[in-house]
Every structure is written in structure tokens, then in C-alpha cells.
Length: 106
Image (cartoon, rainbow, N blue to C red):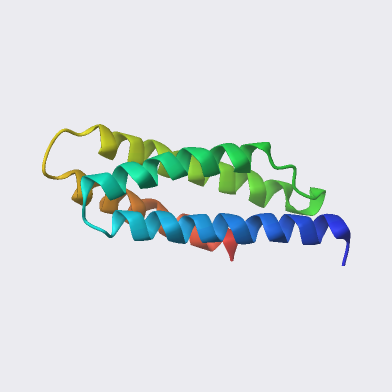
């Protein structure tokens, strides 16, 4: 296997780990967890955008960037809410975009 494929696969593994951390943070059912997840989203989104995938994965990578960007925007909106529904809003944002992210990563 080409080295660039292995390096990209390692990056995707780290992204997957970060996704799990974000889901866990939101599932804490606390505004602090949602804020922590939103901060992590921003970091991961930046990492994904800066990653240069092997040419064979360019289209899928762009879809991943777009999905993560949408997920990040939704979570920032949920975090900005000043109500009791912050956790529910963040969970809804996760649910809305999680299927798309999973399908791309599969």
C-alpha cells in the first residue's frame, strides 16, 4: 500500500476518534459538554480542510469537509443558544449530520 494512503488512513482514524469524543461530550447532557464538543469540531474541521488526500480520495474528502463544516455550523448554532434546550439542539445537529459523515467515511 502506498505510504500516502497509509498516512491518510491514519488521519481518518484520528478524525474518527475525534468524532467519538465529540459525541461523548454532547451525550453528557450538559451545556459544558456541548461547548467542549463545539470547540473540538472547530479543531477537527480545520485539520480536515488542511489535509491533502491522495488523488483517488479527493471527491470523498471534499464531501467529508463539507459534511463536517455543516456539522460544525449546526453545533455552533446550538452552542450559541441561551436556553435549556442547548443539549437537545446539539444532539439534533449531531443526528442530522452523523449519517452523512458515517456514509462518507464508510
